[in-house]
Image (tube, rainbow, N blue to C red; front, top):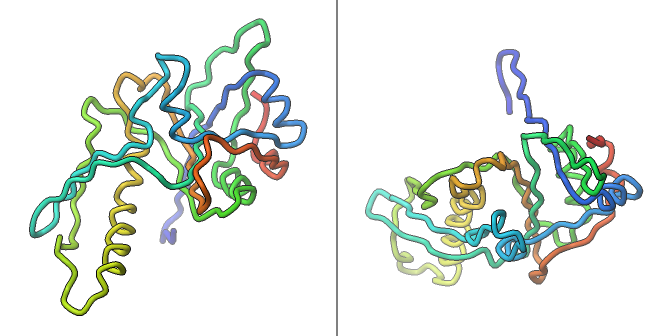
Amino acid sequence: MAFSRPWSFRVPLLTRQMKAEFVDDFFNDGTLRLSSFEVFRRHPDELRRDSQEGRIVMEIEAPNGKTSILGINGQESYVMCASTIETTLPSDGSVAAFRILDTLGFANAISGQIPGFLGGTEGLCSYRDNTMLKKRDSRPIVPPPDGVDPEKWFEEQQHHIGKHSIDAFFIKESRFSHEAEYRFIWFASGTHKDYLDIKCPAALQFCERA
C-alpha cells in the first residue's frame, strides 16, 4: 500500500507447535503437512475440534434486499495455523515449535509448492458468540439482465459472493479464543484432498526454532 507518511506494520510473532519429530523434519529439508478444513472438523481432540471449520453462514445486505448464504468450502484449499501466544513446551521433548518471522515471505514460499495454486489469504481469527457473518454490499441483488448469458452471470455472482465469504474462514466461536490463532489459507484448482505433504526449504529462511 502507498502511504504518504512514515508508517510500519508489525506482524504478530507467530508460533507453530507440533510433535518434535515434525519440527525436525521441517528444519531438515522443509517437510511440512498442510491440512484441509475437513480434517480440522474431524480433529481427534474434542476440545480443539471445530465442526464449523470451512462452513459459511452469511447474510449480505444489498440496496434492494438481503440474501442469505449457507454452505461449505468445496474448493481445494489448505490451512496452517499458528498462535500469537507462545506457551511453555513439555519438558519431555515430545513437542517442539518454530516461529514464523515473515508471514508474507513464508506464505509465498509455500504457495510455490502447491500444484494449481490460485491465491491465498492470511490473518488473525476473530472470536464471537454468534458466528454468522453479516456484510453490506453496494451491488444490488438482481436476476440476470435480458440478453446476458445466465451461466456467465451466475459465475460472476459466485465469484463476487466468494470474495465476501473468505472472512467466514477466520471467524470462530468464543470458546476457542484462548488459541489466539493466526491462519494461512492456500486455494488451489485441483481435486479436494484431506492434506498435502510438501518440501519447501525456501520457507526456512522466514522461520526459526522456538
